[in-house]
Structure formats: C-alpha cells, structure tokens
Length: 147
Image (tube, rainbow, N blue to C red; front, side, top):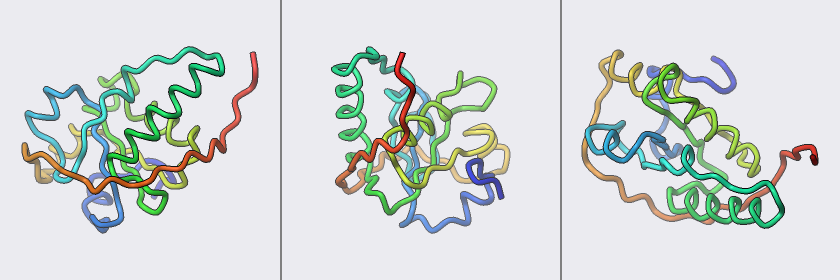
C-alpha cells in the first residue's frame, strides 16, 4: 500500500469510525452522489488566500474551522477525493497539501477518486452526513520558504 494513495478496496476495508471522508467536488456533484459518510469541502479547491502573513492566518483559520466541523481531530485519518485524478484539477492533492501544511498527522488520497470508487462498484449515496464537530489544532509543521 502507498503511504498516501489508497485504492477503493483499501478505503472500503477501513474502520469508518476512524476516518473522515472529504469530497472536494462541487456541491452539485456531491449532492448527485458521494461515498457514504463523506462531507463536502469544495472550498479546498476554490479558496484563494494572499501569501502575506494576514492571508496565511486567514487561510489557517478558515480551514481549521472547516476541518474541525468535518470531524477531524488529529486522531482520525482524513481521506480526500475528487471526481477523478485526471479531471479534478488536483483538488484532492491540494487538500492533501493543505492538511500537511496545517500539520495534520494522517491524510490519504483516494486513488482514482469517485470514478474509481464507482468503477469498483462500491456504494454511493445522496444522504447528507452530519459529522460530530471536533477541535482541529493546526500544527503548521510544514514550513514553506520565504519569498
């Protein structure tokens, strides 16, 4: 198994109480069908911050709030997916980078995204998920070089 990419079968075998599924697709795509238990965080892909200290502080707070509302607490594995790895413009990869930047300890990306999940004949739902909010602490473990 890759340290980052997981297959639909690997995801299906994971304990659902120990993961938070994050769907980065547009809300319309999410509403049409998603992996059971997933939450929709399209802002991972669409949010743009300035690169100054104020912009980075806003980005940190925005996503600490969003990831906490999704149920990420530092103990659960975040599994991020988009429609497909060749059509989502890197949405899931941006989510992976963002969580890494914020210091989240365990993040995976569904290899092949929703398209691979459906191709593997895994279950899909249109039911909304109401995760228990959690406290998301930003570790800021990844340090980017200054410009």
